[in-house]
Image 1: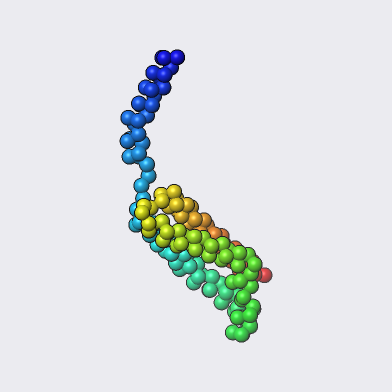
Image 2: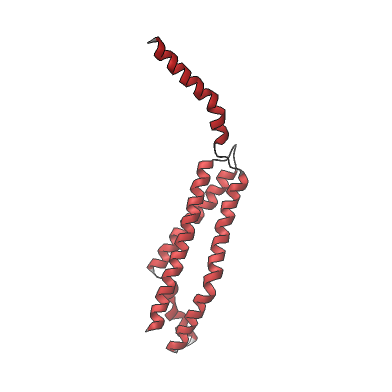
Length: 150
């Protein structure tokens, strides 16, 4: 029994000696890291809109010309291509993610010390936000392309 106790003590001593190394390797984060995730979210949305909006608008104008719609007709007929249940669902999910990112980003950047676990969650939310927006654009383009092919 005495040998077993010494073995446990030696193991605990080894763990304590290595504790500083383990703590030094723990991830650290700063207020700037949280601010960066919030900024990345805004930039990602702007980039996706900048990349897709002009092309999508051109497709809508192409459909308007193909169908011979007046400007008033166009406003009415184009609505399902920019707003339907699936598009609304993508927008709602995006809004929730963006609210989470901005709210938690401000929370994580303030206070006594940043919560690095929260930072990882925010980065995951950012990735999901970008994927949701890409999915929305893919859906919208597929929908208009199908209509243009008729």
